[in-house]
Amino acid sequence: MAMLVAALLALAACGAQPLDGPCLASDAETTVQVPFGRLEGVSHEIEGDVEVAMFRFDRSVAGSTTIVVAPANRPYREFRFDEPVVIAGDRQLEIGLTGLIGGADADRLRSDPSDGQLIREIVQVVAKDGAAWVLGVDGRTCVRVRTSAEAATMTLLVTTAE
Image (cartoon, rainbow, N blue to C red; front, side):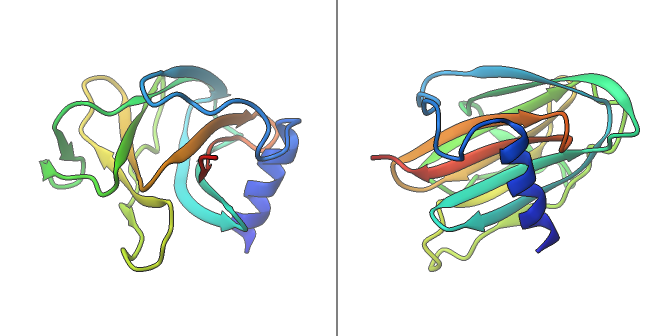
């Protein structure tokens, strides 16, 4: 429940409703920055028709982390085991973070294939620079990127595309 409250606070702090703004095109990338240097964790929350992949930062560690969200288009190796990994889902997005001072290790998050969730998997992968995760989603989805300095988060809002 605390994670859900944090997700909703992050959305409110962005000054936008969850479904405002354009979807990230399937072949496009976007770059955002957060004024924090340490990642606390990654989570997956569901609120109605919106699924949220949330990257939470430690407010007490100032810095400048650049986050690039782009189509995933290369073979990946899972960070923890340095073994090849196939990401679940019809579409994959790579979330690359550079400028982190620490705290980049996160557990792999998967959803049950029978549950109908749009976010199938969030996996930390070996990155060339910094830290990276791959988000796997199912179906025709709309992904929106939000940041909030107040909530110390970067969120990916995932809904069914209309």
